[in-house]
Length: 129
Image 1 (cartoon, rainbow, N blue to C red):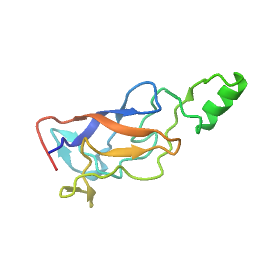
Image 2 (image 1 turned 90 degrees about the vertical axis):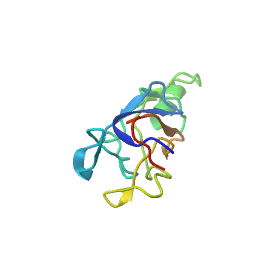
Image 3 (image 1 turned 90 degrees about the horizontal axis):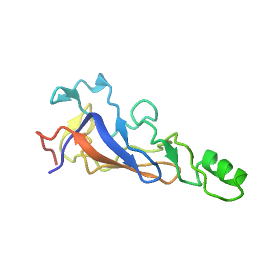
Image 4 (image 1 turned 30 degrees about the horizontal axis):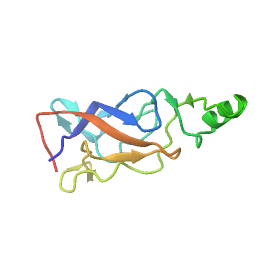
């Protein structure tokens, strides 16, 4: 059993340098532990998924440009997540606003090659599949 993901859950990107938090807006009208609960569609950059400081991926145009300007020395650029798809896999049996609930084992992939994971779901007293 996993933990549900709620507002201000801790997240980390494999290409980012600092952890971040997941912002869950109360649009789904579902709470767990008095906080808005997330579903797999809570993947909007800068609305749900906040930046992870700087990005190490050369697929990020800002990192690539800064690295080229530094004559090939890897120079991380600002992180601006680009998330083409939802979190996966989500909970197979718990639905929030017609989509699977987000649990702490779900991942989201950035277009620049980073894998975003949930390091702490924010609600340790409830479990979901």
